Image (cartoon, rainbow, N blue to C red; front, side, top):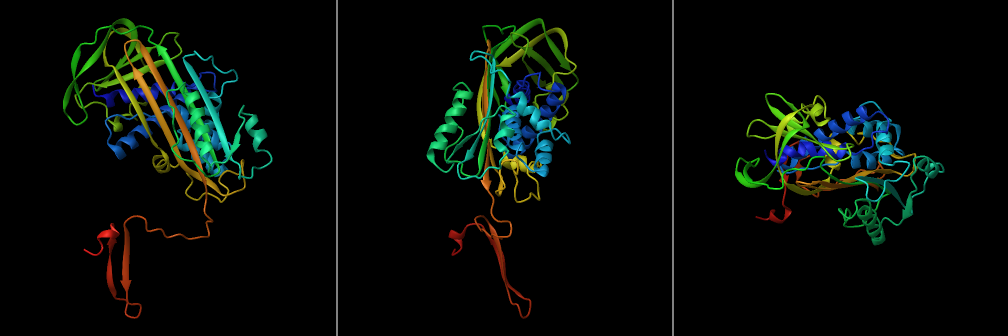
Length: 390
């Protein structure tokens, strides 16, 4: 059972961290499962990595916060990209789920946080601050072009993830604002795995086999689901509020990115039944991170024909999404699970749409033509200007 097999479950475990009281939890779970499947599948196709982990919850919170100030077109695009379809208020419910009225205790299994930082040069519209206050959010205002902003944002992320993710920015973000979503989770299994972890073969995605310590749990206290292709268990944590679905393939190929959409109801914990079973699961830990903006663009989060003021609820200035940085970590052993995630949505001041820019900073084409006769005298592609003389 490759590690990539388990990662279908990681998104489910993180997305399930949103408190159940936030609106329709079923609709939320459906949206988050769809988002997880889409992100993992597209990331796997793009990177081909053996291990991939995303946090639908922190992503929905950070983008949901940005959506509060987005144009009508932007709200629709963000809602659709986050898996809510035509439910424009969907991202707002995800944001509210990550901002509980009463903060969790420091030692609670789950803590969540959101924040927004505006650049001190950005002119906010009069109602922006009161609108944010209605969502229990008090923004910070500082110089996003200065090094202090990196220190402050990284400090916020470190605190919000209880030290698990100390850094999300390496340089000043610039632009108009940064919206942030973060979570930290730590809990013990309801039933711990056996203390001894015998070595067992484990097939990597490339077909090679290695030997790994395999945790073991047997008994009738778990819920299972299976068909001719997959088997799965819904592992409960102490307290009963959280669980982790683990889906394994019956064949040696493991679970692929293309399988995840078909497994959406599995990831949501549907149709699992109590039964006697046996579970073999590797101990594993993972630190992951990337800029999700290219993938989100392909998913339609950014409107193709955005208006000049992309976030009129915050400012009339020309602002657009630039980067969506996400970092995640997870550690699973015989006792339980520790996980954390942080997402930073970074905007930029857009260039005047009337100004046409041609930037040949990657392979470009050229065509030398005779305007009198129409002959093309030369044409080609230049991918490395330093080799042009060879």
